[in-house]
Amino acid sequence: MQTWNAEVVQYHRLRNDLAVVRLVGDAVPFEAGQSVDVVVPQNPRLTRRYSPALPPSLDGKLEFHVRAVPAGWVSGSIVNETRPGDVWRIGNPGGVLRVDDSGRDVVMIAGGTGLAPMRSIILDLARRESPPQVTLYVGGRSPRDLYASDLLWILVSQLPWLTVVPVVDQLKDPWAPDRYNDGIRAEIAGSAPMFEAEHCWEGSLADVVSVQEPFVDKQVLVCGSPGMEAATVAALLANGTPSEAILR
Image 1: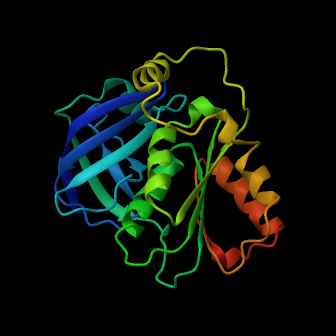
Image 2 (image 1 turned 60 degrees about the vertical axis):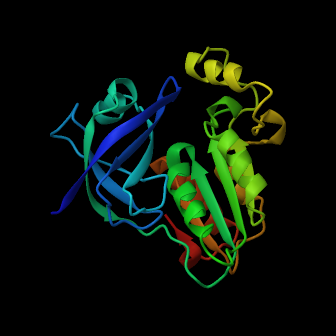
């Protein structure tokens, strides 16, 4: 199996349990929305799959959004130990998340770092002469958990065909501090608008899509944790969305 190398050039810790990693290296032949195998130097014998948050580029730029999961050796080491200069091995692009050329409207439903492949697809669609209308439902545990709310605000302001609907399990943020998020908010306070609690729907993504009209004649993309995907797809089918319209 062919593999490609990429070097970490930027590391941003956005939450206690989440980091954004940017790399530059070989041009990896994936499609926007796909995932790839990743091997990091901290755990060279273990492989995990992550979805790039940027569409493919000839200059070999990659970006990954990684959340540390309980007992996650690889995700934990990426979030806590990644440093510029680390070399990652990338391989085996695959996956079915994509937007076809039919021009049909697109519904994206992303939980947590499931936003990464959706962002890749949105940026890829921006290259098209006539992008379809896209509605992105993006979910988190609370408004603070919406780690890319400032980026999404910028995308919405620049892309007239994009609508973002933030969805959170609870509107009130947990009392426990998150020094990374608190630091970022203090740094950009008043200078960068972002989605806040007043913009959010409260409930799970499955709850929110269950009360929508059936997504008929639309392309529906779902990405998140296994539990989130299962609950959301069940809600979509229950509200009359055709199963053949759903990709995950």
